Image 1 (cartoon, rainbow, N blue to C red):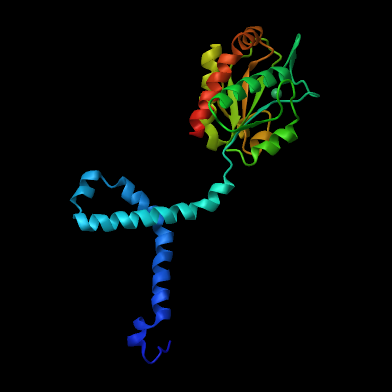
Image 2: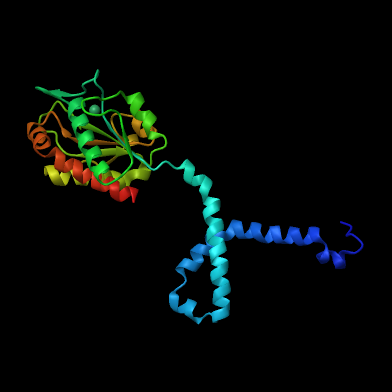
Length: 255
Ligand SMILES: [Zn+2]
């Protein structure tokens, strides 16, 4: 590289000054978030030890960095949709498992409505696959997953053995903790036991194989066995309370 003849005087050139200033601000934009984070975790007594006039400069610098960090974050803010999706398993044309006059799709819709009620009460943004008795199909439910921070679908289990019982949430490994919390919330209200790994079932370990709702990032909560008379009775008697407990888990997760 051949330097221009008067490179020693280069700093006086406007173009170099502008370049240096823009490089400084570019670095500030790049590291603004980290800088604000470091400042935020700096203990107050350490901050107190900084001489007063320097503290003012640092404060000013942090202020500028915070504005830049906010500006830098802005585009991402618009991309992240903060809503919860709650859907009911099966649909108005697919009842799912049936026991006497009760079918899975209707019970799941009731539960969805109750969870939605408590989310609304808490001021949480949410989307559902229908209101009242409307229960849209799986494709409609899967479409809602995209853009939601968390998506939960409600089902009831069924087995040939009337003794089969318990609560489980099927989810990807990344949602293990949330799955366990959801199962526990339901099980505590219904007085049921937890199935799988403390209420979590990894779909790769599930006998059902891959489920569209899970593969797309959702969680499926099995609210007990519709084929078990005691669990069905518990559901009908206490589903509002269980739905409230589920909503609390989701509200906590959102915040
Ligand atoms: Zn089902």
